[in-house]
Length: 462
Picture 1 (cartoon, rainbow, N blue to C red):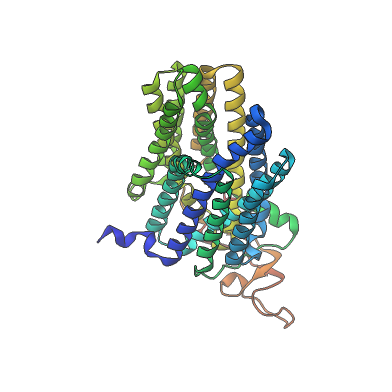
Picture 2: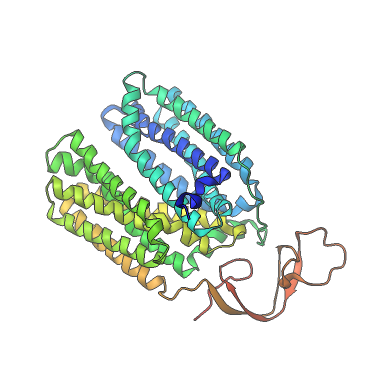
């Protein structure tokens, strides 16, 4: 059969959403460059401090807001929510050229990333509904990884070309237009019907559900450990590339760009070939290989090789994090029901960015205070420990379908009567389905794809 027949781009809804993702990524890449220039305009030689604070604010918004947004995503219409968030992001971006103080900048950065913390997990959780076929979904994840890497490679070049004819303020205008373009593509997309979440309606239960469910799932605890390994690699590349190339090797800006491109090239190469490998090899060994590759490459960095060696190390780091990040969404999707998917993706978004926050802090502080060689050694040890921890947390025998028992119990949540669990007598006051009332479940033992949800609050002992 023709391989193109399996392409997710054959699906019009996915094609629109992928176009929206690429469009907004290009704009965000331009804004990253423009933001650095705006910080220099505001703070001069202290621009690095301004950008560092903005990055910390971004991570705080991601970690704190994503679980809250995910907890209530099932109550909101997905399409309208994504459109609104794109429009608000466009409006916030367009205010940046008119800011005059650092505090105004920090406020807009926080608001902008609050919107992103709401948008991204909801967007990610929608894709499996559009592409229920796992092969197509895996290819979609590969395309997404390629889009991120291409943005990292091409946005600085595009920004440089545009800055030769326009001021940096114009880049903010372009980013605003890309968000509006993304909103338009979402408008013309036909979304599948949203699944009904069978969760209690209390405020705290909804806010905490995603994080609790994520951390109660063994394979997701393993994934979180691997996110820690990715953070070690990514933080070293993002924070210390310029220091290694400019200060240690005494080379220039073009060599710095080449080294950054090496990590992107490694990530892209893996993203291109991984869907084919994942047809025959499970996610877990490929992702463990990624963690091992990261730890080994960081350990090689301890000897502080020259430019050739550094290019290889950065290429291997990019390949390692792509081995983990490309199939990560498959692991999350496998671990949840459609109705709770947004909460799980929000938890994954928050926890993984928490790992990145720690990684950024360690790479920056260690690199500045104890030297690059020692920083490589410490981050290599951390990546190695995170990979070993993932091996322990994520069982080798990890079936999706698990036989388990339910004791008799009563509870209260939105439900329909399409499944045998909810066939119970009614008195007439309960209202149309889905409805909420206290009801009792009989003791039962059965087997089905097991996930943590309203009916399964603890992973079964095996």
